[in-house]
Length: 396
Ligand code: MEV
Image (cartoon, rainbow, N blue to C red; front, side, top):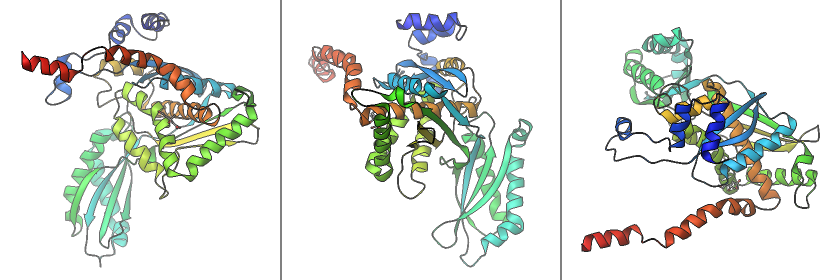
């Protein structure tokens, strides 16, 4: 199929309307008028190719995965990883709550027993202030869930964490408002100097977990038996587990799957990136975000656990027409379901990469798909560069 036919196929399956398909097929570009409402000093737009990764069976549901990405072979690799996972029923997720966390940093005299005060009255009072700051959130089924106190490595330096169920929103604005309101009132509750009041992107109460299994027979390739390939995949994973330099690239491959879906659905990919890498370092050493091993059923098993703070309302999810269409294309998931779909793509992407690394190497498949880019570069080589054009204009 060409891109028009692919869009038509989505229309004929009632996944997209003709209008949505037409919009995406025409680059999904924002009008200048729309773009100017998004950012300051706007001069235009910048589009990325949007593709669909296929073969995704997630918790028994067939899902088309929209991916906005410039790197060739990413969409193909995600689809291939998902195909391997189908040999054992696809991906299975654990439900997560949409808990966003904000931090209020404060300093007290080092002689104060802050933990005693916290349990005596501070915790309850902060909970009340936080709740009062967003009363409508509880009506929508969310609200403040818990308040924690952490002490930092410097005497007198402490942080309050407020964990909030932000329903379908990613929640940055909600928890930032709570943090500022509580931060304003904190000096009324105890003598302290309040510092920064903002969310943390390390959303450890929002960790999404997904797993999959693969039959050995599906892994046979290029002179490797399925079992040999599975062992080589585990060994590539082990290398990442032992070496932060390799773990960085291993996780980059995972983000190859995650970022394009986060972008396509209008979510904040910088927040997801920051959260995932901080989570990967939580033990004190940078670690891979997935785990691969041969399980008791004699199958390759993969697991991913990472914080994916995304929403289906708020931000640009509802105002960027491409994001709206992409969410619809995925079956209009809830925010927590969207996290599970995104984590599945990360696991599939990682499987494809480490399978290739463990067997034939990455370049064979990658370069075949990269050929179209090279062809385009060769064509551009015959065109004058922008600086030459600018020189000519200057001379005129
Ligand atoms: C390239 O964009 C991603 C890989 O380097 C990931 C990996 O090495 O696991 C292939």
